[in-house]
Length: 464
Image (cartoon, rainbow, N blue to C red; front, top):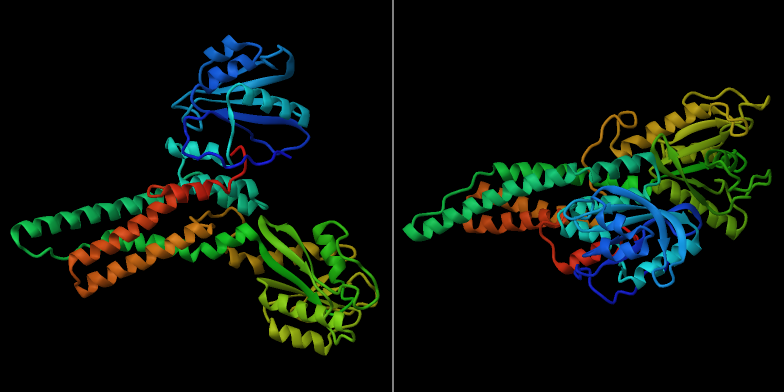
């Protein structure tokens, strides 16, 4: 593992050339090492077997050769170097990327050679920070890079990519620009009013209404955006021996839950992440619902009920060879939206499923495609989807930082609209407009303090 560097310097030390491993640490076929900053290409050239070729390489070009130790002349690895010259490239500053073999020995040696050449070990997210400083990205798109790295499902990937492509940033910047223009007009009218002792007059609410509509839509979609980040919790519930654990193991494609004929085998819940038609799901296997004889089993049953009551969706499994019991009816009354499955249809002793139940065999997989499709239909509205995966990509926020700033903007915009309706003085409306514009600017980074910027980028991966 590559340990994070000590925070002995500031992100704003932009004149310091930096280096870090950009790919995951550990053994791999290839690794990428990034180096950037003033004179980065000249500093890296002596560490390359063809220093002149590297020094003269045009931007956006590749150079093949060997990584060498300048002190001894020893070749370390065969590499390809990508060259980016300011103001082009992804960072807006001189930078190189070394594509080398991904053994821990090569990575350690390469980083050591580059640090000896004058590069400092990069802080977490420092490359993205420098891209931000040079106008190559904004905070929304920078945070989307981290979201894309952590995406655990195709849906989460698509949402993060949408933000990385800049649609959300452009919408927020346009709405903020209209607010700033309205604010400038209002302040100018106030200045003229002071000069000729005439009233400031009212304000055209068009820009405020447009911004409030955007903020409202983003806030409405926040829950779905967060769900893409953490996954929808789907609880598999039912009486003991209904086949819950067998179904859980089939869905996660490994033997995670113990399967046994003895009632009460599963005494606590087990969770695993799966992808359901592009949607991230946290699947939970729970203890069987029944009257428990011991304190430990009773606690397991109690937890099962609590999890089911809070879950985004519940799949309720009934043993078709036994049929419905009072416990089934009681639970389904508490979660009438549950997906009802009639398990063990492969067993000769299984009776026909009642109305509203899907026939299923957790043992053989019979009925599983229809079960998964119905489960997706049950979960999809939680993600704001009423259409198949990929049918639409709404603008959404997923980060808590962005959500809190949208709340701030919404409160200020509501205050401005109420003020317009009530005919309050223009100087009071200006305060609300400025608060809303500042909050929206903080989302994209158009307005941000050094402390906020460092807090945001310090949560990034090394090498990003």
